Length: 170
Image (cartoon, rainbow, N blue to C red; front, side, top):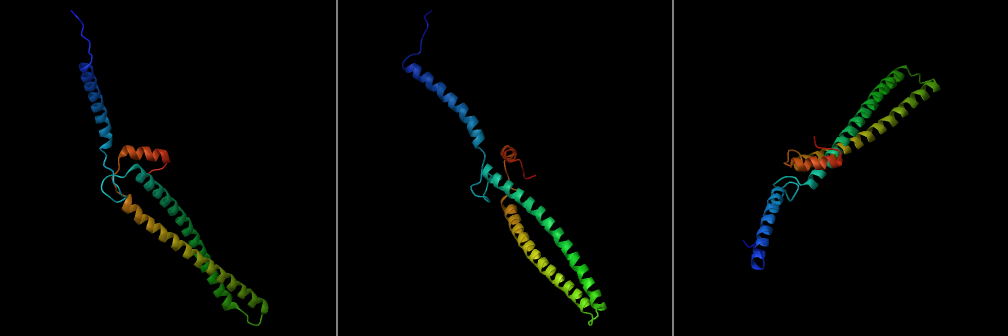
């Protein structure tokens, strides 16, 4: 029996058949990965892209930090407010006992009022700063809810991005 060798036209046909088969296999694996439907804009149809997930995670981290900072500042405001209330009571008592003829008593009372007035100004500035922070926080929460909260994403994308960043949405 004589062996046959592929040559010429037969070799090309065989090569093309194998090549097409390999490309088809690779195409199946490749297309399975590309069947993901990503959105083109942050609020569009489809799932969040890895880049969008990264932006959402950054936003969530910033929101968490702002929330923590606001809580701390709120505690400072409460403490300063309590101090002001206590000072107001002290001033009221001082006013009731004040001897207008005693210069030292009057000076002491006036010093209390000056300190109280300075603390009120400090409190007012802190409240303005706090309200500004809360305003920015609310805007970011609104943006987060619109672009990230409840939005679809691919779990494998999320796992990869969150492990890279060391932080997540959950």
